[in-house]
Each structure stands twice: as structure tokens, then as C-alpha cells.
Image (cartoon, rainbow, N blue to C red; front, side, top):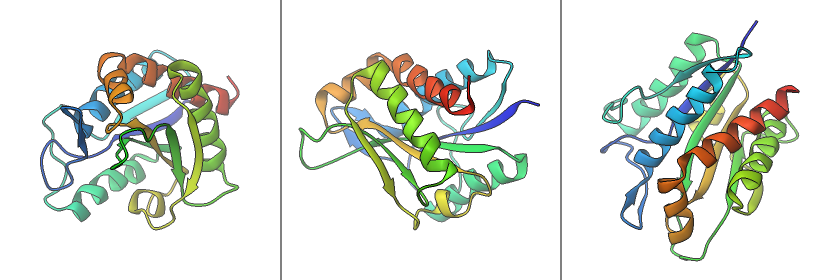
Length: 187
């Protein structure tokens, strides 16, 4: 039976729940594009089934921050996903802040092990430093999912080089995350 991966492209095209902005880019546009490419890689692999949280670049989930997050979690729970992966771009007031990070509910856990493999895959494909796993049990998408969930901060939108890489080479991020998933399931 195929492994069911729910790919959540973090944030909405506009408020509520629009994402960070930096270097002329919007987080939700980057997460949408990378999510679509990741879904294509997963769909081409018979070991996986995939669903996206946003099926068009203008799709708006929810009418508040809370209902936007609930829509993503509920869709994954109702589908019976095996894993939930939420894509994000980090932001900092420090323009040199750099790296990919995985946020999980607890560690050690299935999610933290998956997150470690995803971060290794991202680092191998993009060269962006691996900031490691952080525990964030308060995050709704990590707390309310009925399956292991990883929130991936792929890079910093506030870092000009990382923002440009996410914008111009989104396939590197999709491939890195895909390779991490495959490594985790023993591909």
C-alpha cells in the first residue's frame, strides 16, 4: 500500500495567515511552488500517494488564522495521511540568518527522525546549512495532526541568497525534501 503524504504549503495568498515577506518575495508563493514540485516527485513514485493543502496559487484556506490552520490539519486527518509535511520559509531581523530547520512536536519521535532525513536531503541538494530539529509542541499543525508531522523551515526569506535560491531553483528544495522522505521510508 502506498504511503500517504500530505504536503501543506504554508500560509495563504493574503491575510488571514499570509506569510513572511523578504527580498521582494512572499513566503506563500515560495511554499506553493515548492509544494507542487514536491507533489509531482511523490506522484511519480509508486510508493507514494500525495495531497496538497492548496491546489492553486490563489486558494485561500479559512477565514481566520485558526480556521486556516484547522483546514490544513482536518484535510490531512480526514484523508488518513501517514505523514504531514508543512513547508515554510523562515524570517529574521538579522539578514545573515541562514539555514533549514525542522520543527516537531517531540523528540525522539517518528517526526523528528523524518525531519532529520528531510534536513539532510535539503542540505545535500541546496547547500543551505542544517540548523537541526526544534521542539515546538504548541504549534497547531504539530499538535492536532493524527500522524507524524514536520514543519520544514526550508531557508530564510530574509536572507537574500536563500530567498533567491528558493525562488529560482525551487526544484532543489523539492528534490531535497523528496530524497529525505525516501531515505526515511527506506528507499
